[in-house]
Image (cartoon, rainbow, N blue to C red; front, side, top):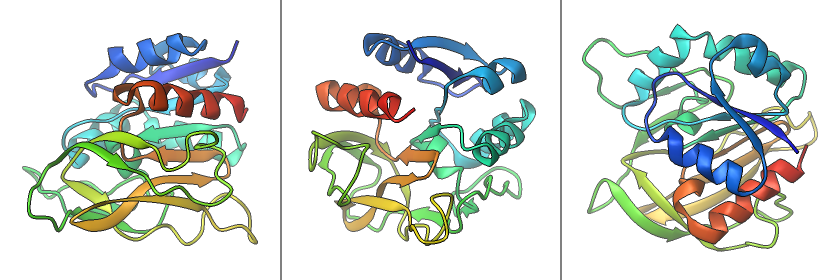
Length: 211
């Protein structure tokens, strides 16, 4: 049984994440304890709401350093929704203060969707990258999105190695945007697997099967 820590840093929507992971057979701990994070087979970084507020919460529990430690050792991390966005360098989303930069493990900035209706709420088809392990058996399925901001440009380099660009899957809402990235030990999705029914459960099973 794979041991997964869901990083508890004050973000909402955590209980449904825990239930989904338990549904597919993971042993789940909801915590920000550094030793638990270091011991876990997989680290799940959730996130809802404002980008900068999530970054502030992550910094309060040492999240950026813990994520960095795991990636340096090539130990799996999955970021979801805003927990995916914060892995980039920054966001144009407004905040009450001057804002906070993202973790910056991937280059690029998250920007507001250019679409007639924002936020994007509902089911959209994901165009799966060729060779994807995350979407194995669920290629080009539909997943549930709730967001106003997204990465419009995929990371050109990352953790997969000097000769392997990240695998980037996309979706469309007014414009084409990054829906998921697979990059060595670091994977992420803009959509919510825990709200995406059987397809979301299969995706989480694929993540667990990767380590």
